Length: 342
Ligand code: ATP
View 1 (cartoon, rainbow, N blue to C red):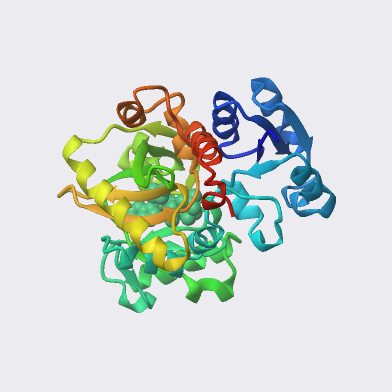
View 2: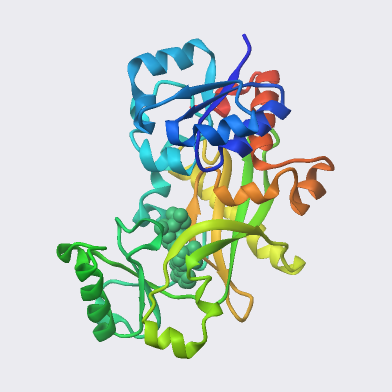
């Protein structure tokens, strides 16, 4: 029976649904009323199912309907953020569910990246240990609202107090900060794909983020920056494509391969499909990785219909949404579906 590709209408759904159509699948977009306009405008969903809230996807009747329609769900950032309860989902999901749970846990992520031998920003256990520029992250601070920079313990407590006053963090949370060395450099996000069908790691696209207000600060003279006491925030507004200095690709590809190797020890069968390494290249062009996402990231949207890398690799338009659909199609043809769907 014909397979259907379904995803939540958010994040990278246009990418995923276009890709599914390019590979000949039927598509379903599950979205809220307020986002419906997006998916109607682009016509990439054969069917739009409206949800009161994203978590309605877990309702028994909704799951039964999707299973009935032979749907495979493609998870993305919104999916992982709102539907953390992956174990309640009976509909087949593309990718490794255990790794998706690892990526939303800062400590587990860190262990994974360290085991892969990557260079990570130093972390500081206690605010008293701060001896250089650090970025302070709070668990609930989505998109960096409530993140701040500090260079000393005194500055840490002063800024934390301001964050509490602004209502961005709870007073009780001040000590629960994740304090990380701030790496000054060029941010680069790598969208990779691990293909069980071909048994290889593929570089599909590279981007950097356009973040408010961090990217707006440079447009204001230092004098005004000082007077206005602006704290940079990192709300993602969009992404730019990046083409790397070619020699730097060696570090990135090696990092991706070892992340995949370690993933096999974390949860059988290891990484399946898209993942992203978020890095900063410092002044010595050293790659410091500060985060991993074990799913498609929105930055891969810059690679529709092809990024320079996916084009070099495939010799045809290829982008993350299409790459996922291609993998599902090839796996179905080769009787390998159970190796990509969990
Ligand atoms: P997401 O989950 O969407 O990636 P997040 O809320 O977990 O976001 P981070 O990715 O940890 O936030 O950080 C947000 C932004 O802060 C990054 O895109 C980057 O610009 C900056 N940043 C984070 N950590 C560091 C670091 N150690 N050094 C320099 N910049 C950093």
